[in-house]
Image (cartoon, rainbow, N blue to C red; front, side):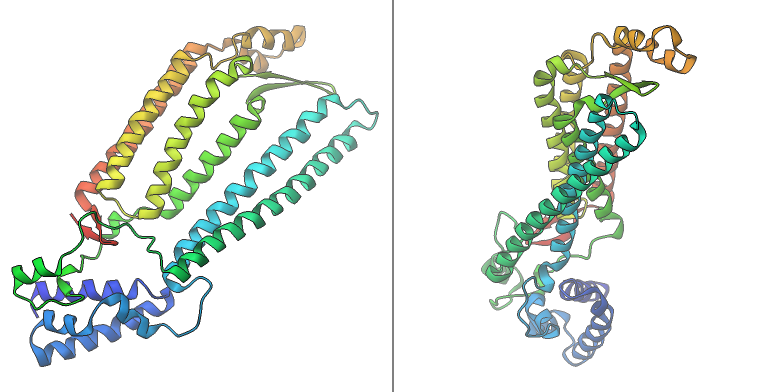
Length: 369
């Protein structure tokens, strides 16, 4: 068996076992290696062997039982990823906002038993948040399940399709192979492990963006310097809340672009030209929008230092006085430099891994570039 024929066998086996549950894949791999090797010994042609076995997607069905699934094995892994992401994104922001609202009520408390009242307010906020989060999660779970159930029934392909369809006739002319529904010539190489994008990193990125967006939209006052004097609590917002209606849209658009890039990485799952182009475009746009937010728009509270000095009063300690050294321009420059560095670093990693290990997405299968 030549290296080229061994490569075709590996491609075929990969396309079969990727459609099976993880617990079953290794056993099926060994069975297929033995079966294909035996058939190759008889026929002497790997192309003839794999053509006889047929489309790996159809061949994989031999290892699947005939049960009717609400969500079948072909879709279950992707379904499970999206359920986790959706549930986290549906629950966590609601819980955070509920806690913020509960904490926001604390300064108004003037009871003699202040500690117990504060604890009770937080507990009540958590109860409301958990209830709302559960209802939100149930709705989100039902929507995602219904969507994937419809895909299962209609056999909608969630993988990306190449723009130009594969032509049996053109392949037959090139290789002089009789026309058929499937041929091993369209099998794509198994992707390099280093080309695989960590799903966990993508999910963490998506969750962070969603939570941060929710806080910016519903609780921008959460970003503040907090001072306590006895039972009194004073907050000084970092952001310019009076002009927040101007700043917020640009802020959210920037985060939304980052969210789209993360979702694309999660769905495709490997470094490829599409992921690289998306990462470069989204990164450049985010840098531009970040510069607009930090250097053009009135994002910072113009009275931040003055309000802090008033909040500190005469009893300010050295740690509290630290806030009086606030410099909006210096903070903007530092944040912008950090954003540019992180974004360019991520783009650089994406370009390197795409060019070094990357794959091209075509015909719903990953192939080495």
